[in-house]
Amino acid sequence: MTHTRGEKKWFLTELPVVDYGKARDLQLRLVAERKTGVIDTDIVLMLEHPPVFTLGRRGGIENLTVSKEFLEKEGVSVIQVERGGDITFHGPGQIVAYPILDLNETRLSVTDYVECLEEVMICTAADWGVMAERNPINRGVWVDLKKLGSIGVAVRKGISFHGMALNVNLSLTPFSWINPCGLEGVAVTSLEKELEQKISMEQVRRRVKHHIERVFGVELVPKNLSELPRLQTALSPRVTSD
Amino acid sequence: MKEINELILPDDLRYAVDHEWARVEGDRVRVGLDDYAQDQLGDIVFVELPQPGETLERGQEFATVESVKAVVECYLPVSGEIVAVNKQLEDSPELMNESSYGDGWMVEVNPKDLSEMDDLMTSAENLERLKGAE
Image (cartoon, rainbow over all chains, first blue to last red; front, side, top):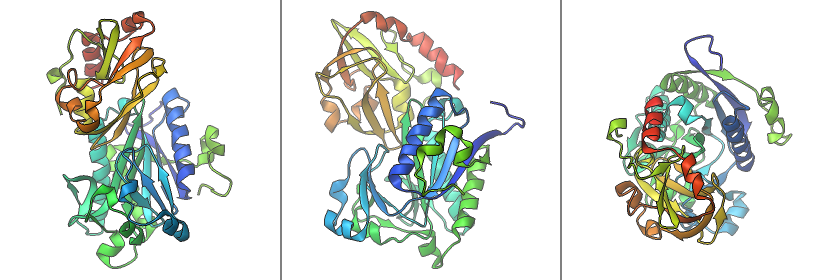
């Protein structure tokens, strides 16, 4: 890699609302290409998902408190994934970041990496005067025992994928259909709920990017998917990079 | 987290780059995750093991280990048939933290070619590599 300045560069690929399965396929492909060296730079995908429940390695279907028929009617799918953690919900209004990092090359331990992601969310919330913190009972960031942001990380051959999800203007109703993270009685919140007003997603994205750069000590270099030549077909035509 | 010089890396084991260990026990090879990996992962809460009878090549994924921090995939350090899995880990995954080289073992393999053991790192080589990664 060529570093013209002292600071390390990561690619940043911002996407609009992307179907969960497609985003996962894209991640798996990037992980493989990062591992084989086809891509020699770490990448952060930043996006939102249509409404979807995802189950972690440990499952969590038992923490779904409504029927599958009900979810079908509501148009929310349920997907099993390889990240850590239990059941969670993604939907529009939640900022999702998936860093595809070579943890060995970055010299980050898994523990430090997860703490850095938490730090990014804590600092972003603080920019709006919301005091979020870590909580020993569960990963992610919390405001008065209500979950504001989630972490679910997977590592394949030293390459990280999945990542963090910060609730901004998300509809919180679907969380009432589950025991989030497999914990009963856990409440969920969003920046909108804490501040009692809608927040600009664009502004929050900007602050998330800023804190990623600061916390990880990197410079984010915007790249469209089409600028990563081998990845062009990873997403369906209806999804375009902006 | 432990300092590199606090890590326990017994001399009678061989180590793979993704932190699996392998130890010849009679005609079998016992496999687990090393002290560095368990320390990095933090409290291990779930272990997914293969079915006995499966035959895998070295480098193939044979298990996933989930901690409070992350899920990592584990790769078999030597080719062969899985002849035993540590059932105790289902109920007590924390054994991998408490006893990485003892009760926290993961699987036993009937190795296809024992000379593959020679391709793995010794304790000293593993330690050198970890120092380099600091």
